[in-house]
Image (cartoon, rainbow, N blue to C red):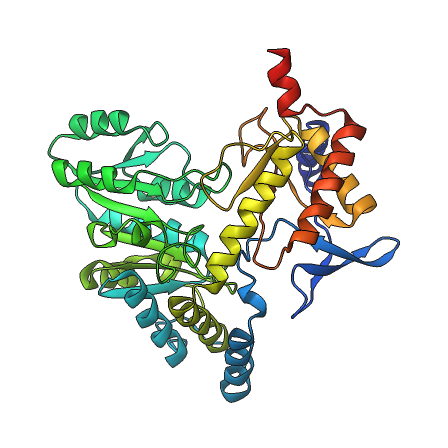
Length: 408
């Protein structure tokens, strides 16, 4: 058996489980979001993207594009090195100040992605705490799990959003250093964590808190700082982490905290030290997006309205829309093969692009379509989506919520 045979076999295993991932060749069009050009095998065609994480369409906002292009023309394309060598550019320093202000913290630190910010920060914080135990929510993102594992510390998993289970583990940890790691919005189910109650437990048992606001920043709170801002508890959290690639529409990840914590991560995290800094133009674009959403509620209001309209429209025809407190609209399929068939039909027959969500992103048997409305998905597009999903559900004979209830 050759080396290639090993890797070919691994890929064939995914094919046999009906969860091999195919990437559509998409070309976004500035000023025309959520429309895009799909470079299909038969040729280019127009599609509507319904699964983008650019939740507010900020990737095409005039202020963001102007900051990007003006900075690139002024200073060039790349950063020129790691932050420790020559990459510590002024727009990036200003972005970190903007983010610290957003979350009401003393300092911020920007990474190349949200994945890296979680992996590097969690592992570094826990590794620097003597005899630390990490208490991690069962549904935490893969990047948080990577950070927990990379710390080398003992890790205990608490049942998702279960405060009694968390308290039990805090009691068992005794006088050890404790780090509670959790998210505000869980992106596959769309539910929200009880942040205030978790902070109560952290205060009671002397634990640090690490909150991932990746799917909430830009979208919630008076200035777009996330669920913790909306709930008035930002000051109670030790570390708040976020991304610049979703609600803010650019790329990069970050953490905000006290100056000593941020300085320690800056000095000790390999994922920060040995990575080239994000380019100045990207930093300027991200800062423009953050600054705009601090003062503009228009995008958030429109986003929440269109999300509610989408949920109502899909539920009205009996589609199994899973319960969601947020902008995430998950529609249960329950079979990887049927999920792939459904999304293929939506794309080829209806010009609608949605990616199927399969294991290991979600547990087996809970495969789904994850729909992400934006302020730019108007009522006409919602009607078109509803009609298309209705046709696909009929063609594949997929279960409807009202039919399942009737059978019970």
